[in-house]
Image 1 (cartoon, one colour):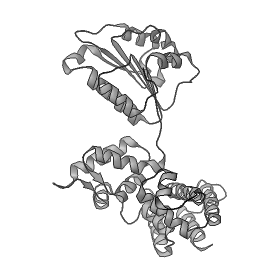
Image 2: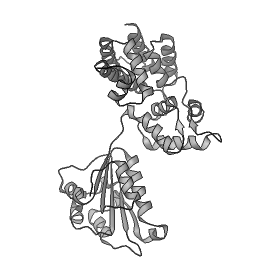
Image 3: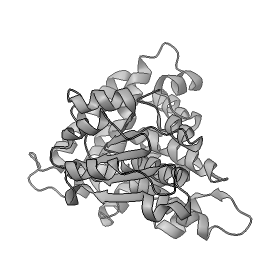
Length: 338
């Protein structure tokens, strides 16, 4: 059988009731691990079968030999018995489960949720699960992948989200997909009747992210070399540090100018070439073609160096306790005037 599949491949197999005897779902991004687990539970058992055949345990409360005993039981009035071990990273000597994997019970579906890390690929259990089951490593998305993921998720719900709104959400929440999904679902509930588009206004009203004073607008002002608007937003961030920490602004700036540096070395610099080169949506590519006109390769390199310098200062290295707001204003001045 196919192994080390993508999330979409695994969900598609599960929906066909094509189950593996063992699933090792591991990695830093818990969202995909939970979705695959929920899909298995939903598709493998009917409601009438769950009481006797759905076993959910937590790694801190169970030993590896107890897991083996649970997995060796046969189902009761059901085709499958599903044994889910949540927080499997807390199971001591989890690699000892290899004895079960090599002699698994075909009617059992054993699901190991190993979060916030991975099992050493050199362990025998990895080779054995890879031979008979499914191994999925759930990796965190990069910051610049989050807006597109938000758009895709919203489309699956039957609507869409405006590009600015998706970046506002990504900027405010970060990489936590579970929290992003929760916020989108809340927006969906509060959306006016007959509307299926998440707008910046809707995000501002219901989540508390300003549609004018956020890192999306801050970056746009920097790209456009708009001194007045850049400083106005920097001042707003200074007055609202909890919801606008300098570290987040530095990450946004560093991601943009690092990608802009890559754009300077593309053979062609039109929007389509930038979109393909950076693997980003077309609306984001426009920002880079604009930035290419305003910032030379040399200036871009200088800005990247400045951002790293101010990142160190924001973390207390050689800053002499200069407030974050003042650091950000200094950085804006050096980017726009030097």
